[in-house]
Image (cartoon, rainbow, N blue to C red; front, side):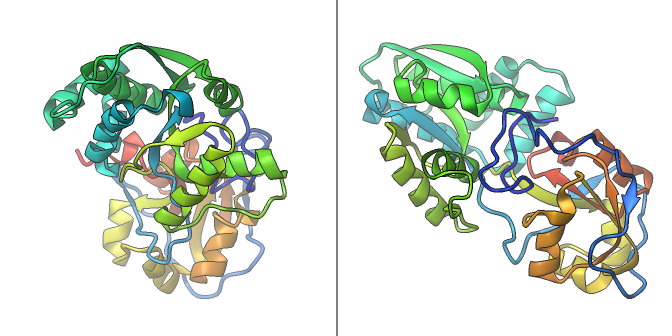
Length: 333
């Protein structure tokens, strides 16, 4: 399970050290009726080994695109341009495959990153910078480690002496980035924007992130300017909340989008799986009700995009479940 706190599940501003810390024990409350009852037959779970994400066609989720965060004093044009080379090559399917290489195939982040860089020409045309020591800080989950290794490859090609250092959660590495104790960190646009927003304005601050990437990045850069953090170009790759079904379920009920799910599968037989707080969260079940008018017949309280939810989908215990959009379980092959 990722250790990155998910903005979309958690309450805005509660960006804790571990994934959804304080949410209660996974699976502690069993399968409960949702707050808003469903009518109609719904869509019973369909077991299967392959998971697919339903398209968020009405943009419920905010844009948590991968983006390089840089200490402003270290942000030379050549350094930022090298990091942008990584962003330009990284989309969500490629990030899924990178995660699969590490989390499933058990390659090291260094090996997975080097293979990706070689296959995708990450260092082609990298301009040499002034050189010097650069420390890339890393969150305590494998995706962050792999992206950090990609940053190291690009920065090394630009003439920097690069060290990758695992620091832990955002509460630890963000102050280190401000102070210049680390110079670069892989970040996520919406989550980082809300972290800086609530740090400056309190936990009840009005959200600044958006389903529109440009708006999220503008808010992120404005917040970063105030604390000495710059940002490169966002990648197309996103690691954010998503809702998955088995391919067998999608084929049986002919659903490809969340609008399809709401139109065809609102009803008593449909089981939604997710973390205990999902029914109340605006980016989880509450958002599905508000934005899509999707009403599940029951809610299975499990985990946040973790093994319990994915197992429930694959074994036919849940119809649809909360996952992360770059999860290795979504790999095509």
